[in-house]
Image (tube, rainbow, N blue to C red):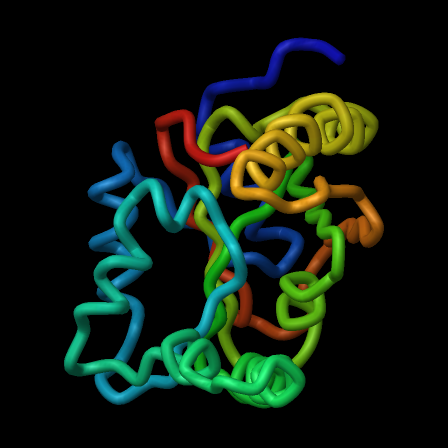
Length: 200
């Protein structure tokens, strides 16, 4: 695939907005973290999927230490029975006020591509929570949809596969691939674009 487009400019923000996404621009991961936290109202039920980006910019640590938010991931992770934990995770995530995460690619024309092994993130990006916030590093910007899909397989998958193997799991796969052409619900999906290399 060709080199990712690194520039976050007004044309990109406008392309996302025309597709029903709410774009925001942050210069650094720290700025993005503060921006996202500022979008979370007091008392909100907040959940998120696995995300190297959220870990990297300190969102997960901030949620774990927050006394003003209801942190859904802490609730379902505390359930001892594995089967009940999965069911609780589903109930909390689909009912979250705000669901956070990341995606694998954003095109210059405003399309967004997300991928998962299980689909546990894409499920709640597409349905359930009234608000979704994605944090996306400039390394995930590409020119076209073809490049976005190539990036999933050639960049994101190998790095995620190596990560999960490093913690003793069997590996990763692209079992669910979602192209977000637009969002029909105004202001449901916010995309925070960051002028840094973040995540996979």
